[in-house]
Image (tube, rainbow over the protein chains, first blue to last red):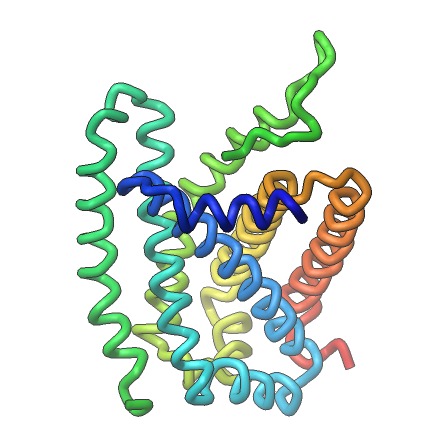
Length: 128
Length: 132
């Protein structure tokens, strides 16, 4: 666990640029999505248990107001992870593009935000 | 990212599983760029989450395009779970360097991952309401 504390210290103190923040956001969104996916598989498993169990879990885990707020984070996480993953693949296979990666991160973030904002507004309709 | 602290030595002539795992993350990522983005935007923006009731799922899985939906959901399950849990495994290797804890956490990860894979497959293939 010493390594984890050390990492957290570096994450806060390291004055990295776009690449560092993209890496950090990729890891955080990835771990968050993995956690959500685990919950999601269990709730879909309950389809096998019939409408009463499933509809109850669906109401609590997806439709309630706190769930809607978390859903906004999920949408941002998935969109960013997808876009940033594509950047990683492109730079892995065309390493020459590495020198433009700060620009690529900015463009990628712009595209993510352009898709995310309407998605967030649609999601939060009825909650706000 | 992705070079495991603990599996980094490979014997000559043996497959390099960490390299395969690295490549798998790229390939499954490419597939999921298409299917997860579609799944997310379709279920959240078109169907809307509040309409995803038991009946809605029954209609989709037993409808005329049921096989296509089940195939898509199976692909989401397999790619999502393996890609996601491999990422968690990389994170464990990155942050937990104590050999014992590293092993315990990864064993726990494999057990939970296997249970979720079975649970997800049961949901898709046994049929709604037939597990009771």
